[in-house]
Length: 133
Image 1: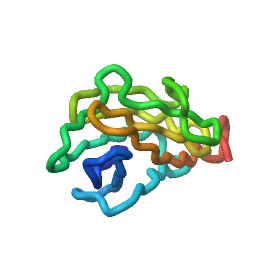
Image 2: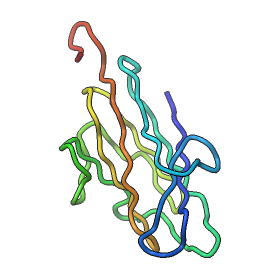
Image 3: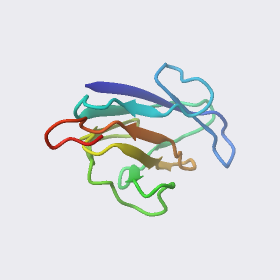
Image 4: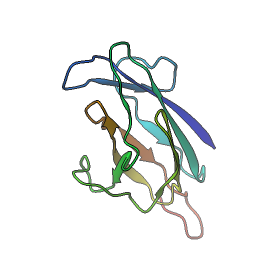
C-alpha cells in the first residue's frame, strides 16, 4: 500500500506550527497515519509544501526520528519497523513493515523550521500464525 501525507507550516515564526494530513493542502492540525491490521507493509510519502515567507526543507542528514517508546522521540534513531527509502528537500519516503501493533511516535526534522511530531498507528500483521493481535 502507499500513503501520501502533506506537510505544511502554518506560520513562519518560531515555534513553527505544522499541519499534516492526506489532502493538499492539509487541514489544520496533525492527522495520525493509520496502518490497518493485516494490511502488510506501508510506503509513506511525506510531501513538504511551501509556505510563503519561509524557506524550510527536510533535514538531508536526519529527516525523521521514530520510536515506539510511548512518547515523542528525543534523539536520532528509527524504530526497527521503519526504513527511509528516499529523501530530498521536499519529499521523504519511508517504509513501515507494520509488523507490530502499536503507536509509533515520529518527528520530522527540517532546516529552517522547528520539527513536527505526529504519530503512526500500526495495526500489526493481524491474527494467525506468527501474527499479533
